[in-house]
Length: 404
Image (cartoon, rainbow, N blue to C red):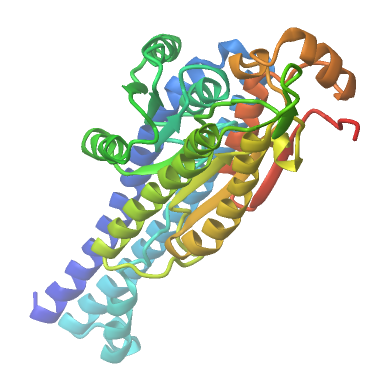
């Protein structure tokens, strides 16, 4: 057989091989994808039967996508086989002087040899299970204030939605128990407890270093740690008649924990992502890329002003400005920033206000007439993380509207 004939046959075989390999890769990706999703499915027993139906619908959709892709691959294989036959017949006629050779000029044969290799097939990945977001699934997250309340609920929800690792940060050693309970419930190690002061810059950097070394780049940050030190800005001492002003040292402490620390936890994540992108030769983020990370700050309804919470209200209102500014800056690196304002939530911090205070000044002015559950706020935070179209502020106040 001539050199040209060998090249043509080789082109035919290479084309068929590529289509076959694509088909095999399709199956491998499908199996790998669903094997990863299975731990998430296995936990859906907590929400039957609708969760099962949702999974069935998602599975059916993914299988149909695979079937359509396979049909396209089969069409390409048939086209390649027909082209191979035509070329083979042309080569045979050209070599022995048969009538076929007269009907198939060499130029046509050469053109066929160019079109035999099929175009690359873009394989669609199987869809994520219902309730699982590409911004959360297999991502690494850091949640501060995770020993109780909203922080613990967020860490649990992120693990439940398929995060690869969630670092639970808190000054309270009880964060270890929370991490253990999350891992036991999921049946895999997801939650990693880290005990330390969230206002300590060295500790903060070490957390991100540890996360990167053990799990990968952090792309979700929810700095939820906070404290309250409530008192009126000005009160009158009944015995002396002198005015008592809110201690400036206490003001600094509250804003350090509730304002400065959260901002710098968010900044730290953005900085790491920016460095990683530059290392890969990337500059300004483009819409064609996936979202690189999400920061969600914990505001409060107190940011509107709340009697007896001068320092806390200032800190939470300050986070609004921080989130708005970081959103404009960090999107250059593909990072979204937002803030959620929870209402009075069933947490140790809220109960510290006193049950009488809650009955008199909170519940009567809340449309739901109850405290918000931490899981409800965690769900709203995960919504903000998952939906890339959501930006700015989200109010989850249960309809709380206090009187003037």
